[in-house]
Length: 518
Image 1: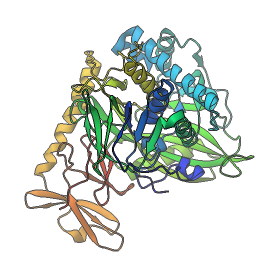
Image 2: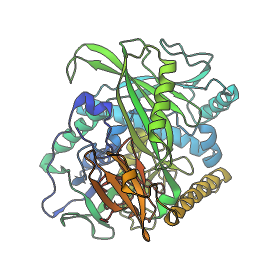
Image 3: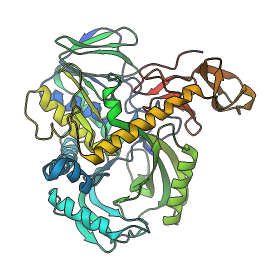
Image 4: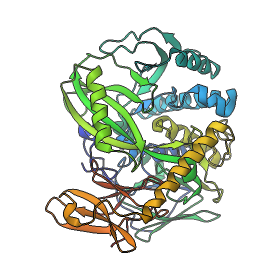
């Protein structure tokens, strides 16, 4: 199945196959809430609102889970990537406690939904191990242990080594009661549950691109085909909000992250979650592969390893993927073959916590979920809980912590904010430089490059047959010059993370339209 977010394929689609079909929107409609995005954030929010008696319409520009949810490694964890030592510094001890509580509650809510809706999605509880690189400082673990305990995770333990088979971490922290599942099986089950609500209160429309969003007393979204859905509230659950042009995109940065899924003998590595501490970091889990697409006797395990992140459009994707493979093969000699390799996109807030709530500088009834910081499964779920409470007029204990309009004044957060925005400003200097090549003949078939032509820059793709395709190299979001990504055959914006396919068609926002024709 060709996914809409990149050219590579994740193991989830390889194991399970194409997403179920849903119709496109072909008429104007009304609802209590319209949710834009049919990944885990959108489907979770829709499901929770339906349980409250709301009529909900979900609109998705591609297929179900065709965005970043289909490219996750699907860790369910309260061991947050930016660590409780940093969260406590930025948000205080109470803020760190709320972060731990909310991500733990998100795992519980996922488990509850699975049980109540009888979703067969390979869910399990298991241990997680945070470990150091070879040159790591053990004091880092000591500090994190104390911070995790202060945050309420009193079950976290410090170990001299993990009691695991096939991979020993060395000194580590044990985080008990983590979780994992098959993301597509979960989302397909969630979509089925949405369709079961009485009276057709839950409807999903795919291949329906939202072009305009309007808040206010008569909120609405308008599709690229000109159809309008009117509602009392709009929820943007699109990984990064396409309705917000500037504010949120100065507070978070887009990173590519890489994943491989390698075949190993069944049971040769203990089933657990594993994470290391360096930057760029690595994360590991296993997935049993059984006879047949939906069950049977496990034949082998897929070792799923991710990491080697870099800012969108500013790294070398092929090199990052090769480094990830090298790192994995060095530590797991039992690998038989690599079955899948892919990349995904995560949003990193300058103050380390994601956003879920009312969109800043927008009407009160427009909501966003973004800034997953590598914890998309739990952040999307807790975001759906928060937004459901806000729409229902209920107080939520986590709402202030994840408020998209918050301002974090600590020096560490201010430093990240300034650093990332200076990085963006530097990228604009490419408007004045020459191109990657000076002639089309320099572009290899199946590749792309940016060329200057007069006062403008063009994104030129030369297909495998040697035919050239040209479009503007200027991202329609805020005017940066896109870069060619050879791994995914895409044009990536190094400023705010928008991505386009080889022919200029939009893959990922915050841009909300294709690259313009040359």
